[in-house]
Image (cartoon, rainbow, N blue to C red; front, top):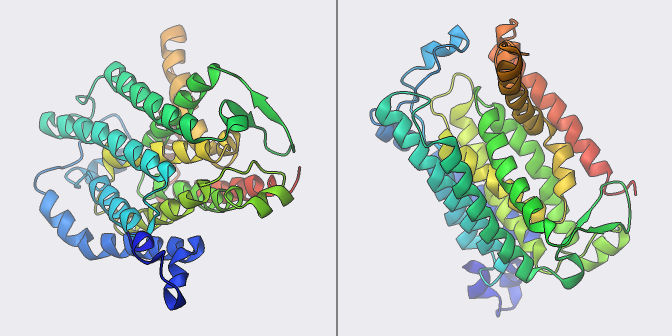
Length: 357
């Protein structure tokens, strides 16, 4: 909104044209929105939407019964307001990522609502229905990105640490993109099981894509670093700024001991947004590096289910894998800190791929 209002003005208002300035402003805007309304929001929902706790989980989690959930609603609101204020609203990529975030958030909201109403962590939407809806929405997002993407990148993917390699996979690209978006959203959802865990790992990945989106949106930087140049994709940097601010605001209240949980409405929303950002920036495989913990969390669940069906017993004490370490004696704070350290290292490796080519 501000960009549209002042883009024709000169003088001091020229600063509003710079992506770097608007990214910082978007981050602070969404952060302050969550900090200002966070306590009121928690007080409003704490008697209405309490998080059901899995009885078979770590015994230390039972004391969390009654903690309000759906903190992701305020996250989405903060991101939406901040993005509308600071993004160039004529940019199609911005609308695609906002649409996907809100749509996946709506699926998560319905899922959370059913769980709260039934008082059971397993009584939400069926897994099949969730996946069908998510793949439909991902297909819509994929078509939108495809229509805006430069011709040479429409169905191509890049490989980290290698320059000038474009792997055109044709029509399979639509399936690939859908898997990336759906997989990322659900992986973040599975990681959201300990106070602050998903948020802190998400921040590490977002910082990587904050830098990547800015670079690929600049013809000079992308040429120097042998990155694909995607006109207009730099505007996604502003959106990521608003996302980082909202996650930081949520983390203020979600840090141990959590006063609120983000719920499926939050984890599915920000997870899908991260997936869409990776597609727009042609950095899907880069997400595998900086978001490797999300991947491991999802794989641990798949392996656990497969093991129970084939062997009648699990591989881990409990899945996702962060619960396995809790049951081995690690405290919540230890799991979060160690996983975050690993995510920072992975983020640095991902950033190194921008230069090592």
